[in-house]
Length: 510
Image (tube, rainbow, N blue to C red):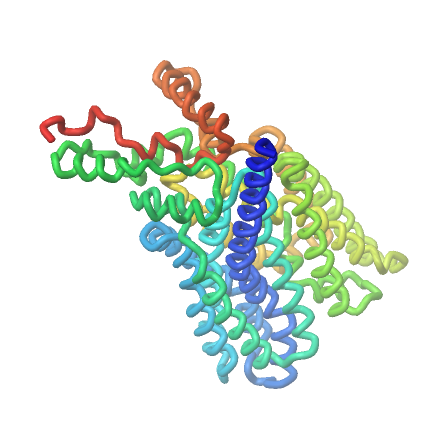
């Protein structure tokens, strides 16, 4: 019985940890659901505007800008996210997007001129840019390594769910009512997130050790320890004026280190592949694609089917991301997307030469593409942003990566029609296929596996191993990790070494 009691207690703690961390992830992922609403709004709303208010969008060019402007606003929002995440934390940055979205949806719902619509859509994109890096980092920092892959994929699932909900609601609601519904969901986001604690990793970087400890304790995070004497020692150090000046994590020397540049390069490459696969060209122009491909299926129904497949695929990926690993899923995803885009190009080519015997080939190709995208490149690049980027620079790097991702997204959307004119529609999809294949080669050769690793050990993968100083540093870190492992701690994102001040830095006159 004595042996069973600790086991039952540990099982209860694991259950509570999974429950609280999952609840936090679901609540924060509502922000990604709102991003999905922003991304999917133009597909049903623009036709509704032409039907209900014919003069609101005077020409096709203005309608195109109203549809595609959110990524442009999101680019600036993601840049602003860095100082906000650093100053007020991940949680309050996510919460700040709620009033931004509320304002944008009110402007859309009451708009009587296309310029107001353009401004409001840009503002909604700005909100998406704020939450894109902050929500994913918040979730990753508040989860244990064993389940980080699962709950870290919930934001991407929520985004695809938001797109699908918008497609379905757009079939029955007019564009103004649709905007009011989105406004209500944005209000609920603020309420959903406010009751959860701040990220313990962010609190630690701000030297709020006791609050970090309380946050980690509430979340039942493993490996987070707190020495009550640490604050007293640091106060004594501060009073004795013996604090050594630490290098800023955002200085030129700090940012030019190998362990910062390599993760950033990998993150930017993965986000580039994600967008250059043509995913947003498919999402923004699904109805048009089906019509121009000569598909025998109704364009709006096909859009809902493709959206439903994306949600189902994202949901299925939750159960394999921590079992199969990040790298195998990325490789599988890239191969499937490459083949599907090649098939899509073939469907357009057959239609261009008058062969209409393959009316369902575009639908089958896009369904397969969405399955491939959802199991890998749809969610894993965002998950890796929270795992690969070092803690001290994570706010800055995630902000830069998010802005870069949104800039590439905007470029892909705006170049889709010019590419159709330049190299034909079939050539455009074949180009996407080749880019997906190049992405597979990159993943095989450059992307490390992070499955089951704690954040500290992931960051050590990018440190130099051939120098004496680096060897000593790595060797010295082993006892800390081993001790944590023996104690059953696997999350060393907030290590003991960061909390306890060395005694040789204390003024002995005290």
